[in-house]
View (cartoon, rainbow, N blue to C red):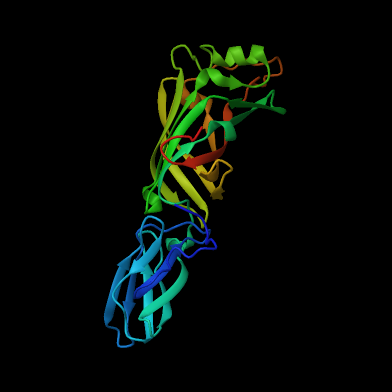
Length: 286
């Protein structure tokens, strides 16, 4: 898949029929879109499919005159336009833009690999009921599968529990112990989505199973899609932000030292913040 229009015309060349590019609003190719051309009586005179680059080239020469062109693709709202066919029997349609169904935008469909070097998995807990302790996990990976129907998309991720880092070695060792994560027995924290619901034009609720400390619970992620674009290494990246709130007791982590004033030293809830960059493809390019 490639980005917006370049100086050359990939849909150009000799011959009749139609020439067009089909793109998303942010300039990425819509694979296998279908163009249907009808004359002014409503009779279909041509039907052509875009290739992997979203380019349509084809069809027999058409009689000069005005035609209606309808572009369709799974997961996108249809778009109609009027085209004029020249004496050469061809309509040059330029770039046709399709919007996601319901106005929702997502990256191009297909596999995406989470890039841990440019992503953050962080958690925040209260300490002594007054201040916040911030931590993050430094080792993780995963895969996102964007479907033609966005609500059929999925995500899987694995976090290495021992990679927890709060900036305090003594505290980190305690978090890795049996009082909390028990990393020797449960080295991995896993997440696997079970469904995705649209919550807005760029917001989603990801439903899934979180496995941690030997317990699996249903956990929802509030997800925002931040956009996509090319990177310096020739790839395509997409960015997401997600949040969730967890209760330690739901994952059998019940340790809670209480100070003399009766205040829990460590809060019972955690706020999780995910800032994720994913690279298009089955693996990272480096």
